[in-house]
Amino acid sequence: DVQMTQSPSSLSASVGDSVTITCQASQDISTYLNWYQQKPGKAPQILIYDASNLETGVPSRFSGSGSGTHFTLTISNLQPEDIATYSCQQYDNLPSWTFGQGTKVEIK
Amino acid sequence: EVQLVQSGPEVKKPGESLKISCKGSGYNFDTYWIGWVRQMPGKGLEWMGVIFPGDSDARYSPSFQGQVIISVDKSISVVYLQWSSLKASDTARYYCARRSRWGYLGYWGQGTLVTVSS
Image (cartoon, rainbow over all chains, first blue to last red; front, side):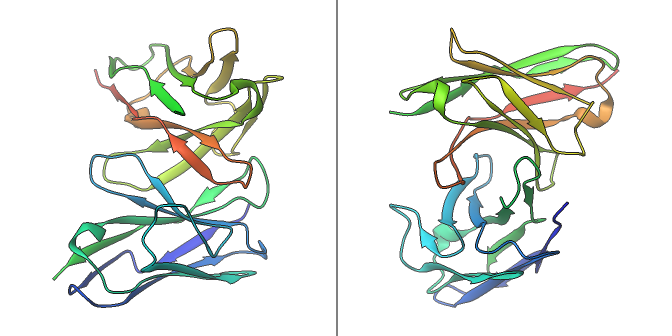
């Protein structure tokens, strides 16, 4: 199975900062990588699909990059409403999709 | 409007059986994979398995194979997740989610909280 290692597990940044979250796959998954945002008490929502494609309606301060085994999610100009947990998910091989452990983003 | 509506919270005892549901509406139910995701208290998301309602093809994450059964009743547009003998470690919120044509989980149910306690 493909394992996803996500880091950091949590981070604290100021409004307006740029933050980066990383996911490392245990094997080459091309660009079969999605990013989700989960706010407290809510279901996850898709942010980025296929490593770098912004879902409709998601603010442009969110961006994704990477291919193969190394992927990043960047939030530019961090806003208070971005407080959430962010998780990567690989979908290279149905049904063994896997999620990263999640990164909790807080505001300083 | 695409919607996935899940059944309500459950409180069960260890050893009991349980079947929770996820009803899809607003789209052609037969043609999209629907998956289940577990989230234990304070923890991350775990992929459990997926089913294609059109032909009931169910596939499981190795971690959940043999632990749960995913089934569908396409006549009423409902996908199920069931356990035959619950354990305390099954306490979690369970989400259903619809896989998009591009592979991501684009629509999610509201989640079903399952509490297993003696």
